[in-house]
Image 1 (cartoon, one colour):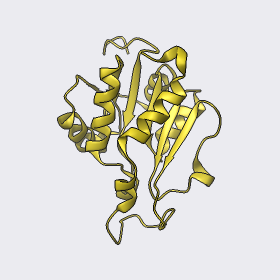
Image 2: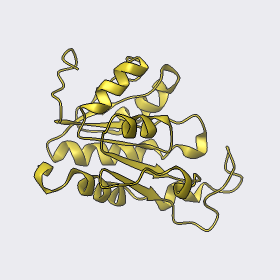
Image 3: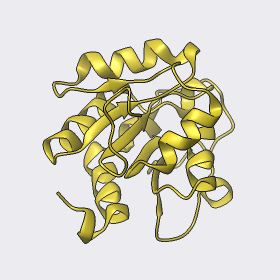
Length: 172
């Protein structure tokens, strides 16, 4: 964190990757959330495994605000420490959301086809933003129709959830 110039509690983490394409909220939407949070005064960090570098690069290319890209640059333990000290994780329904919960981090998880009843973390430090479509949850790894679940989740809904988990004392 020190090498990246990150101060504990002063940055948010965007984790745009996921092993299944249907669990990936579009890069442009992550970029919109990242830009809005940067405008609120947060440092923005991108994370992911080495195989997700293209996904993070797509988010970074769409952002206008500065962003620290640590995709592929952390071990699992390093990611855990990064999440432990962040203000909040914004990510897909994937392992990073579970790791954030395990280390006590605040999180906002975007559920597209995934089942939030089964997988969402509960409590005041976590929010699930869920696709509003009749076909979700679904079991497909590749959407057989038009990926309407991704289009149904708006950046404004994710930002509202982030502001909720951050609480009044953390608002910038």
